[in-house]
Structure formats: structure tokens, C-alpha cells
Length: 434
Image (cartoon, rainbow, N blue to C red):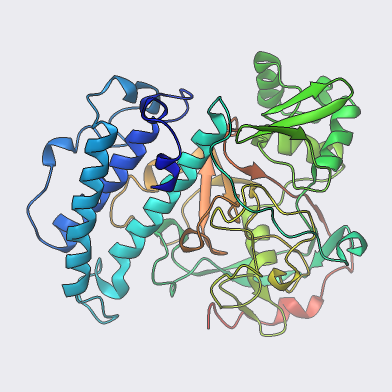
């Protein structure tokens, strides 16, 4: 409601980019999904507005075509949201959501958690629409905390020991189908950037002619650079000799110490090649974020099993920008890597694929239809992601050309002979979670 209440009604119904829906579509879509799954499915109640289902089916109409639909206007959409939420809360109050509930959708309140995550994912989408929107600023938030005193002295990379670990989860009550099931993956030792790649480091890539040299790009990436005329991350421009960026309507110098943002997979991959490194695989990323060598098990989060707090990570649109690299020491992983959760989504080298034993639930269109080489996996969550939709097993995915999302990256390299704890190979993981 805050994201839609911050703009005029004309802004609500406008399409600010063909990549995004009008904000008013997202608002009513959130209510429609809640009606479908919580009022009708979980509550067994008759539909409030079944006539709206086809308008707000995300798989029926592409985003670029949604403004032409006979959508609810702003006042109608808000009234619909209020009516649905009222019934949802009645259903929740009466529902049996105990862990031993036989109905899988209701056990541990899964269907309510699924819809809470769905709403927050659309809140992040709406925040991306705000970033694409032209005009004066309408959103504001406190600045993130300054980098801690030790940030400048952090090592540039950390060693993640080789050996097996438990990837995915079979115990997280609200995990989505693509995070399931838990399975053992053997990951050789590797080195990983301690923090995400910063704007300052990325500026060196630009200054070195990175966007002009095809040696650093895949053939598809180089073709994309040439076709789109890419010269820098999205929303960056030159002001004389200074690079500036537009951030939610504010134009400001690019801060060197923040993680780079709004780069596509091709840009992340090219930077890594230029730096003599590579993007981490998805399994490497998750091992760095979750594996506890001392206990031989996988944690829920880099810092442990406790839910994220403001001391751990930059989440929940609490701040409208990444925190400086090296922030949130309380959220560090056992490997010593920081900011694996929050700040920026991190591109990985991996295609989006199912885990062994994957089962689509509760519908194929959440994950299964996206599996394949067209999509690259992102991990970790950005500052626009709510805590309910951010955990060390959570998987995001997108086309490798996408830049409007709040994505950055960190790089990796193989460990040399003798690097990494050989003992790790002889100890099986003790499982995931607490």
C-alpha cells in the first residue's frame, strides 16, 4: 500500500516500462492470488471476483500487454484488496495450520507463507517499477549504516573448503518447490570474494575498455552489448568526468564503496573474465553461505538459524540502496564472506534447473516451466527483498539480459593444489537446519 500510495493515480495506471506491469496491476494481482489460494482454496469459500481471474493471471498476458486489459482502477483495486484481506484473516483464524495437518497446503501454514512470499516478491517488483519511473522522487528511507571499522582491512577473498555439504532443504516449512529436497553435493575447494564486487572495482573494468573488448564476453553477451549500446550499468550516465546514477528519482555520484547494481548476467560474467576469475556456481554460492565446517551441517542463514534482523542484513526495503561493502559483520558466514544475504541479488554461473527428486507443488507454473538454459540463477536477495522471501536456500532466476532487477555479483576462482581442508572430504554433512 505504501508503494502504490506514494504516486498519483496517473502513475498507478501508467506503464513505466514494457518490462513491467502498471503498479495498479500488481496491486490487484496480489489480491487475486490471495483470493484464489487463501479465500477459495484454504478457506473453501466462494470466489469474490472470479471474473477477474483472467485479467490477473500472470501467465496469460505478458507484462507489455497488460495496460490494454480492462483492469480495476486504483479505487476499485484498493477496495478489492481490503475485501480479500478481510476474508483471508477470517480463514487464517479458523484454519488448522498445525505441522501434523494432513492437507499439505495447510500444514505449518504453508499456503499462507507462500502467499506472504508472493506479496513480498511483487513488492520488490513494484520497487523496480519505481526505479524505472521518470519524475521527481516519491520514495524515501534512512541511509544504511556506514561500513564497520574493519571493512577496509578485510581480505579480498575467502577460502571455502572442499567436500560435501547439504544443499537445498527438506525442513524449511515455507520453502518453495525449487528449494526442495535437501541433497548432498560435493563441492571442490574454491576462493570467493569476501564482499560483492563494488562500483569502484567495476569502474576499473569500464576504464580499461571492458565494454569495447569482445575478449571478455561470450558471443551472446558481445552481441547484446553491441545491439543495446551498453557502456555501463543501467541508470548510470556521465556528468563531465564523473559517473552519476539515477536512484528512485535522485541523481547522485556513483558511490565507489557500494556493491555494483543493475548489471545483467553478461556484464557480471565479462567482469569476472576480465578480472581473471569467474562467477561462482549456485552450489558454490550456497555452500559459502550455509555450510558450517565446525558442525558439518548446513545453516538456514550465513549467521546461523535465527531469522534475519537489522544487524544481519540489508533487507525489507528498510534502506533504498545497498550498504557499503564489508557491512553487517554479524551476518557473516563461517567462510568469512559478508553480505551474502541482502543488499544485491548475486548472479551465479548456473542455469535454473530442478534438484534431484524435484516435485512441482502446488502448481507447475511457479518453477517447472522456467527450468532450462534460458534462465540464470541469482541468490542472496537484495535490499528490496523482505525477510519472509529471503533465506540461504531461496532461488531466484531471470534472463541473462535483465538489468532492471536489483542484481550484482561476486566472483570466484578454483583453489590451488593443497588449498582447502582435505579432512572435509572424509566427513559427511550432519544435515541441514537446527
